[in-house]
Length: 155
Image (cartoon, rainbow, N blue to C red; front, side, top):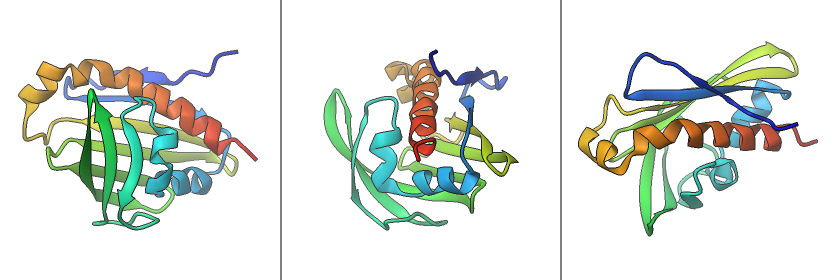
C-alpha cells in the first residue's frame, strides 16, 4: 500500500500545500522539523543537501544555513518567522517565500500535519513563475510529508 499525502486546494494561486496524518505525537514530529540537520531527510524535492550553520534546534528568529541544489549547488540562509512549540513552525529566506508546517493533535498518538509554501510575501513572483516552482511545489510538499511520516513513525 502506497502512502500518500493529500494536496490541498487553497483558493490562492500563490499558496500551495498538502496534508497527511501521522501516527506519532505532535512533539516527535515537531522535533524533526525544528532540527535543521534533519531537513535533508525530510525534503521530498531533493534540493536540500545539508545543514551548514545555525542552532541545533530552531526557535523564533533563528537563522540557519542550508546547502541546496537546483541544477547548480548554492547556499541559502533561512529565518524562522513563526514558532509555536509542537504546533507551528515556518521559515523564509532572502526571497521571502515561506515554508510553514502546522501540526494538529488528533489524539495523543496521532497528528494531522499540513505543509504550505506561501509565495505571497515573495520579492520575486516572476522568478517563481519562470522556474515553475509554484506548479511543482504541491507534489514536492506531498513527498516531503510522506518522508516526514516515515521518519516520525519509526520506533
